[in-house]
Image (cartoon, rainbow, N blue to C red; front, side, top):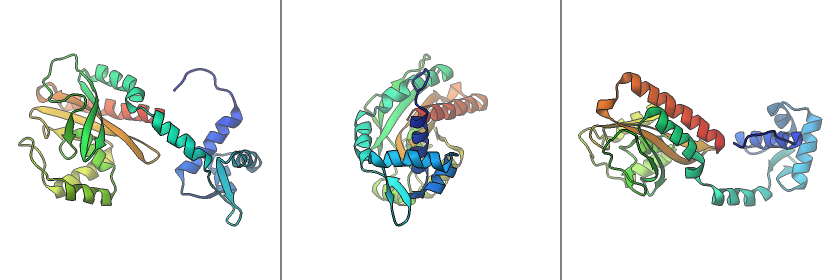
Length: 251
């Protein structure tokens, strides 16, 4: 986020209103918004009227509810065209690499695979079978399992109907029921673990990058088994969760 003094209290309040509308079901009343952003009805109404005049929101005269306007569609499309998850996350992933002294990856899902976008090498030598542009399976990697945990039940059903589960190592989980159990665990704790499932003797901790119900990618920390114990694993998990929170604030 850009540093320095901000100007325009009304702009900030307008953003709070739009953020609130984004966080709830479609269609909200003046009362809902006023209470949701902790602003007087009179002030909220003035901002809503201005936003409506600019076609950024619109009001259904029958239900008295407000909705997002068509003007925002163009902004959203341009934002997605300009969006670069690598650029946004790189400073935080670099810090994560430095904090853990282990290799950090960034990836996105494409055609039921994870595609590596970034690889930040550990200062300590380790032989990892990964390269930018390379692919790995969702079901046996930290980034992949984190991405699976963000899918809906129907999306998961579709994924498992399309993919043949083959073991990459002796530790790879190829049982769909067991993978569903892992997915539930990931949803509860907010991170995933690849315990030598994709590459022998390599352990990874991963998490997704998500905002406004959209997943932008995933990242992970990879370390050889001989360099990790329960204490270091706990620290890596903490760093991963802190990094996830920091990047998602920037999205």
